Length: 282
Image 1 (spheres, rainbow, N blue to C red):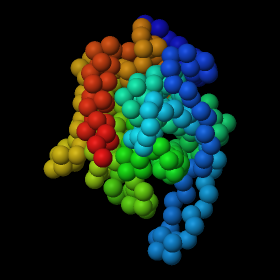
Image 2: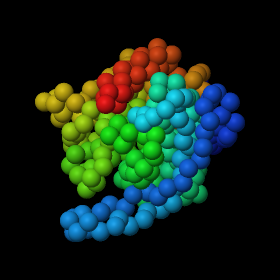
Image 3: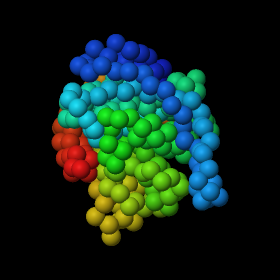
């Protein structure tokens, strides 16, 4: 088994600059992370404060909108080619995509061995709401049909963003649906919108049992779906992890990443069906 330094994950992100796998034009767009509004400001209708300036990579399908849209949130290693591959696939299916970069604007490369406040999942959830506000203002995006998909660290942020007991109740504009690839599941989360969680049963970084606990908490609702893939590891949908390798994690731990073609193909089908059900219809 390979043991690769985590710097290779950061280096892999450089491949996205060529974007050779995408047939859609990609535009770098700038907006601000959201600021959590106070109850008093909500009631007064005051103009919201501006958050930290961030950016993302916007691409659109062919044809005329308004289109549904999806925000994509990277993991602890930053932007990877796989995120742009997913975006290109979704463009072909008729979605505007915004690959959100939470790290570059803050001069952060990765946070896999430790986290810090500017890029903690709670802050990244506010990044997602900033992206939601930006997309909602585009003439060719339907603001009522915007979803979010996150991977690993970005998946934690995704679930944080749509937790009905969390910040979502503080924003008037909310997401329509959310999907999370191999998140670290916090079992007290509850949701009032469709949520799909996809995780490998052999994941040694984000324990699938925690996601099973989350599913039990939400079992009375038909909005939450958990899919576990037998024998699949963290990063099962990233073909660049094909042969598998270890990376360093927090607290001196090491975690195995590996592509799983069967799990990947199934996840593609499930994401397609999930978004078609919850975002495609007007």
